[in-house]
Image 1 (cartoon, rainbow, N blue to C red):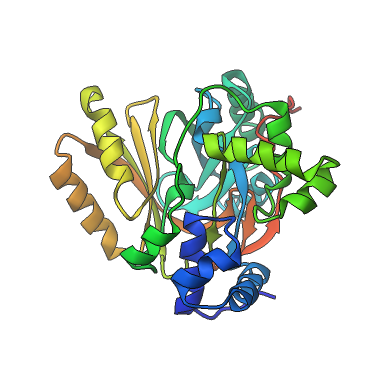
Image 2: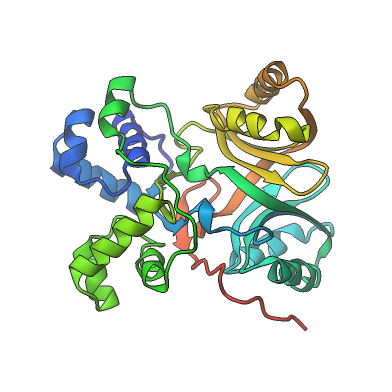
Length: 342
C-alpha cells in the first residue's frame, strides 16, 4: 500500500545512511542514527513496502562501453506521449523513462550491448513505435558521476564520517566475469538480500557468492545504491541540462559539477552539447540559482538546452507512481541483443 505522507526525520536519516552503505547490517547503523536495530529494521520494511525507498544493484560505470549508454529525447504526436511512455517503460533496454518539458516529450535512458545495438534500438524500436515522431540521441562517452553516488543531506558530518565505507569508489579495468554477473543480476530487484539466501537462489555456496559479490562491488564493476521517492523526500524538481564546454575544460567542469550537492549524474557526450547533467532540486526557483552558480564557476560553459521532468515513469528498472514511489520492478537486461522490429 502506497501512502502519501512526507517522510519523517528518521526515515530520511535511514535512507541517507543506506546511501553510504546500502548493505550495512542494522547493528552498524544503530549507533550513528541513534536507534536500535529492531526499530531500523521495521522502518526499512515500511519504507520498502510503501515504495518510498528501495535498494537496486546494477553494473558500474566501468562496464559501459562507448555507444552502449545514451539519453534519448523522444517527440510524440499530440496525445501519444502517455502510451509511448508506458510501452517504453516495459523495455528491458530502457533503464529510465521521464515525461519532460521542452521540444521533446520524453527522455529515455537507454543501455544496449554496443553501439550497433544502440542504433538498432533507436531506429528500429523507437523510430517505428506508433505515435513517435522524432528522436535525438546523446551518446555517453564517459560517466563522470553515477546517480547512485548522490546523497541527501539528512545526516551531519559526524554521522556521515561514521558511515562512510573504506575502499569505496575504486574501479577496475575489464568487464565483470560471467560468475560475477550472476549475483549482481539476482540482486537487481533487492540489493539487501543476504548472501546465504542469494546462494540458495543461485545454487552456489554462500562463501562463493560472498567472494564474487565482494569482488564485483569492491572493484566498482557493480554498484548497490539506495533510491528514494524524491517528492516525499523533499526533492521536488528534476532537471536535465545540456552544456557546451571547451574540450580542454571538459574534465574539470565535469568534476566540478559532480561535486555539487544537487547533481545526481554527469556524463560527457558526443555532440554539440558535450556535457550532460541531471540534478535534483527542492524547488523550481533553485534551477536559476544552480545555473547562476554554474556560470560563475565555469564561465566557458554554455547551457544549450534544458528540460524539467513532469513525471518520472521509470527509474533504473522501477516503475513509479505520480509521487515517485516504486510500484513494480521491470527487469533490466542491457546485455540482451536488440530484436529487429517489423
